[in-house]
Image (cartoon, rainbow, N blue to C red):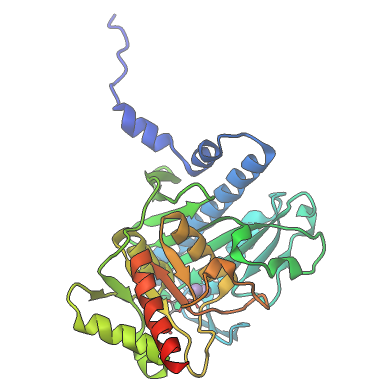
Length: 345
Ligand code: AHG
Ligand code: MN
Ligand code: MN
């Protein structure tokens, strides 16, 4: 009778395959406190939402009534895609009966959505952009979801406690629906990426403590708006046009563009325009979560002059211009703004 010899599985691959998101968070926090358990459970629900959205996206082209517009216009004044609504509802449904999140505030909803049975047990608010880069969704190009978790201070429907700067975010990140589905997050202890292994149905740790280079070759902006920009942003764009070592990349999805810059270095900018000086991107569920993450990776994020994480919104769907990425590149953009100001004074 031969004795059972377990197949030698390389320790690292077994250990890696077992480093799931929930385990990683508890490791990060070095704690099993109720707050740590809450955060771990919330992130696991966000991962579930990501899996459901990824599954829908992967089959969208073969299913009826998944792509295209709903015919509605959202609070942003934008035409709503069917995937925006589906993804918005997925996040709501994964948090019902969770006892975790009391309120969800989304790009797609005029007002926050309350889950009364979760309040006041669940003292958290989830702020999210269910599908970022909607213009890509019908043509099978990368889109994302952006999320931030905040402590809910009040136990009523008043959203005033949401109108605070981004330093109060407990966690933030995004899910990138690309060739693989990747979740990138931070709870204030660095930035970490997880890849969805469809055969396991789990997000598995891919990269820990990601650091953005201090400088990179990528600049990412929609030059079609050049005619509407303040002179300073035109000065920066002319500079990169005339100097070696820069490459333009712009996908139309903030999550994809910022992820490239996180990994390769560079700067993404969405300036304000003469008509819309506050720009297009929304603070509470686009620019603030990404600013939290990029600063955790050693980068920088401002509206061109003010640090994004210091900006206090005047309303739930407040917008800010965005300059985000490698600190040297963000500083270069800010220097053109400073120069213009000095010349005008
Ligand atoms: P959303 O699809 O959530 O409305 O976000 C789209 C945003 C952002 O993802 C992207 O960087 C930007 O809009 C693109 O705007 P332009 O098409 O004006 O370049
Ligand atoms: Mn968006
Ligand atoms: Mn969106």
